[in-house]
Image (tube, rainbow, N blue to C red):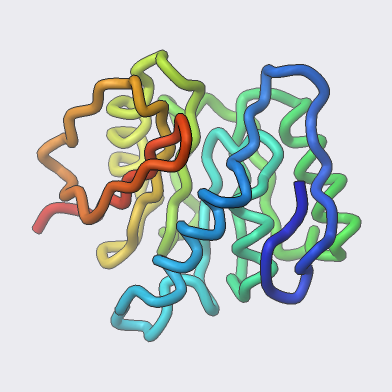
Length: 186
């Protein structure tokens, strides 16, 4: 696994042993960032100069890719020490640790956000139906800016009904992964 684009292009990410952590594949990451880099936003860009959160971060591939592409700050949240250790090691290697916050927390019971984020990446374990509870926690704890987007990853075999507080902007499929872009409902 490596960073696809930006100032850290080609640099290798720390990856886990075994199958407990499932990093987002390169093809899906590239597609997501192509969408985000070209999406209209009142600030001009969803990525450049933004704050992002990578919730259920695993290896931190999404948040670290975002740092490589110009975000101001990335918050990485996971319930395991192993995942946060992987992120910390990669962030130190890339000399980005000062632009990172690492939080150990359950995604369904997030702490209050230090500041709202323009992009929130959600990659919960597949087939556990955690996404609705995580979305409710993101909203209740102030993690998403009003004009921000959520990028949610789930299995193509996993049922998902978008909660009324959100609008599904787009949906894409890459192998066994389904990517949803969601915004707050008006």
